[in-house]
Image 1: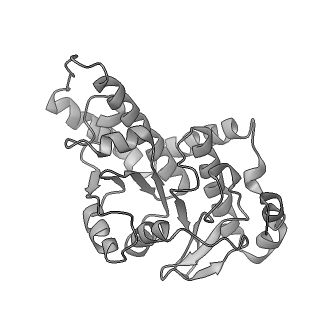
Image 2: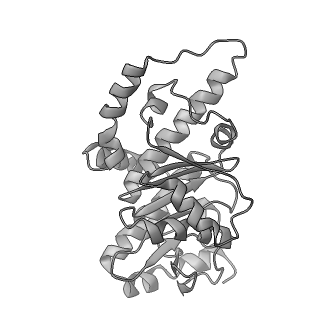
Length: 264
């Protein structure tokens, strides 16, 4: 197919051959891509968001390699298995292998996590390059206290054996900072993963802005306050509170003021 228009024309065909449950995940994942484009979290055609396909097969959805985030729709997502075999690709573009390596690692090892989102934003990478990592200097960052994993940079993720080390570093967490690389959040749903990503991106924005003040000394809250917020934030970490749905619904209202094509 030679154009995004022709790619999006397959919408009805794709919808007719997938389950209603898969279509629902496709729509939500496409919305996450469009929201990331709206917030300017993209790195051209690079970085990836993925979601597990409901059902017994070990399949997940990921972006076609060559489409911009604001071109992703429910019908042009690529379905792939954990071995990297493409199950369904309406675009004919295939996938970025580096994205497959990272996302298949988590989908294969953590069946409790349904979606994995990864960004290469300026402030996210800036924080990932700092030895101290994410600092507990804002309400946003303190909410991640005790639940951020770190994975050392090994080069472009093309080696399958890196998956074992990435999963080991992630452990039982769902938020990871990839050193010298970027941010990664996962969740029990697309909505949950996106909520975590938005808060993590904001925490990194605040940290970089605070550090840019130069000689200004940063204020670190007392340990007991950090522990208190850590306990308060557990409802967000689990993805089970009513706030996830409300957060997502507000995002969709914002997105649909200018973009409804993601649902096609």
